[in-house]
Length: 180
Image 1 (tube, rainbow, N blue to C red):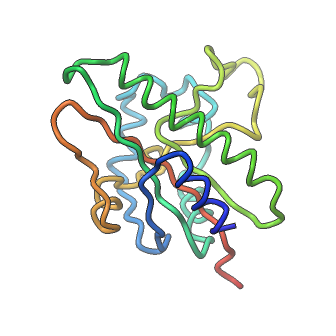
Image 2: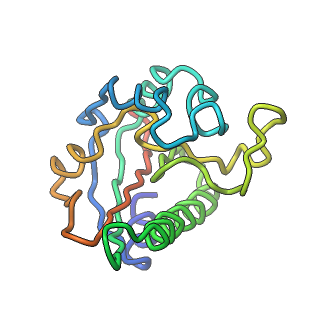
C-alpha cells in the first residue's frame, strides 16, 4: 500500500513524508476552536464536530495505525486575500484525496484518511436533518481532531508556511496495523 500511495502522490506533484502516528501532537485547544465555530461549519456538517462524535475515539483510531504519509501542496495566491485561489487549492487537494480514498478501497489493508478542511462533496450538507449522502467518502479534517499540523509538518521536514501569497494544504493517510 505504501508504494502505491507514494506513486500516486508523486504523479500528482505532492510533497510528502512518512510519519509515525505516535509522534502526532494533539492539542485540545485546536479541537475546541471547532466548537467556537471558527470556520462556520460546527454543527453544520457530518464531517465536523459535534457530528463526528468523540474526538478521543478518533484519536485512538489514528494511533492504532503503524504508519502514515503526510502530504501537502502549495497554492500560489495573487494576494493574501485571494479567496478564490485558496478555495481552488483546497478543492484540488480534496479531490485528489477522494481519488486516493477510492483507489485504496481496492486493497484489503485497513486505512484512514484525514483531509485539508471539512468535507465539501455536497454543496449543502444534509446535517442534521438527513443522513450523510456519502458516508464512505466523507473526510474529516486534521484540525477537527486537534492535530497541530504546523508542528507535524515541522517535525517531518515539511514546510507549513511557504512564503507570502501562498497557502499550503495538508492531508494524511494512515495505514498498517500497529498490532502487526
